[in-house]
Amino acid sequence: MDQAIFTRYLSGKARIFWQLIICEEVTKSNATFLNACEILNRLSLYADIGVMAYEQLSIIDHIKELREKRNAVILAHNYQRPEVQDIADYTGDSLGLSKMAAATSADVIVFCGVHFMAETAKILSPEKKVLLPDMKAGCPMANMIKPSQLQALQDGNPHAKTVCYVNSSAEIKAMSDLCCTSSNAVHIIRQAFDEDDKIIFVPDKHLGNYVSSQVKHEIILWPGYCPTHIKILPEHIHDMKEAFPNAEVLVHPECYFRVIELADKALSTGQMLEYVAQSDGMAFIIGTERELLYRLRKDNPGKTFYHVTEYAVCPNMKKITLEKVLASLKHMTGEIMLSDEVIHRAGRSIREMLKYSQ
Ligand code: SF4
Image (cartoon, rainbow, N blue to C red):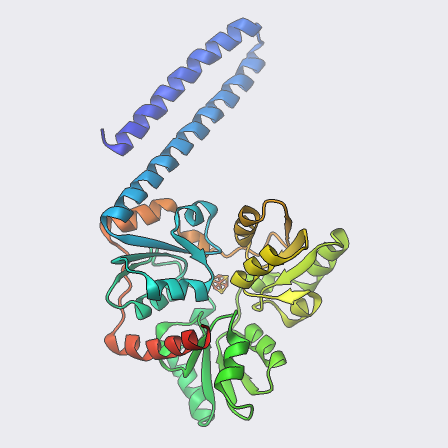
């Protein structure tokens, strides 16, 4: 029987079953009409939850089946929905995902993240099919600089080297000398350039500012920013520290510099996962996107995590759902296409980054 028909059949059966129970409950307890309504509401809610859980299970089974059939690998960023993280073969930050994309022997990469991440996977594995389950899952920060704007900045600073944060389009990467992630930006700039080199850093001014505080190089910033991380404010850190004085504060370098200054550490999501796993600390205030806490809690069941503010949620990352992963694998939709030239030039700046990150 077709999956959808079976689901509907089961849903109908579940309702009839619950209605029978309701009749019995009502008779047994001699309940008033209002009690009966309450029981009815509650039981039909349980029925809905049961059917939803069944539907999700069948989607997961179907995804697993297609993953095998297509020889596909599912990569998910740490900010993805919990159920998407759970179905992934690998979950990680931009650097970890780039390495996985470069190393996989799968024919198809289903990238659960945002557009620039899937592009990066395509650049590193051009012979593979890279699918983004929702083509509208973009990163506003990556869209904050256009090639023509970077060209103007480079023309105005002809001797400067260009470093692009991985959160940038393939065209911007193709125009850069080096790519970096939040976990390796400081290390890469120290290793790759002389201290008197001038550096154009795009597009994130907050990460650029943080890098600038850690290196001696002159850094020219572009005014891009992450709309999710700038929702984390100094007052949130103050309030949380007051409420949980024994907790360590870990924030992402995409936050305001004033927020970073108040934290114990500024770390990428991958670094936060490593740091927490090795730390003797038992409680942490986490200053990044909400879904990292899912992974932190899963990996560290004995430790406590507080999200710094409920507003730090990236709606773009949440566009990927199990249903869209299934549809993408089923119909092979959402394929990332890039020209050979962009793949070649952008690949150079990403491979340089990987060389410095080994
Ligand atoms: S969290 Fe910020 S940088 Fe990351 S995808 Fe969302 S908008 Fe872009």
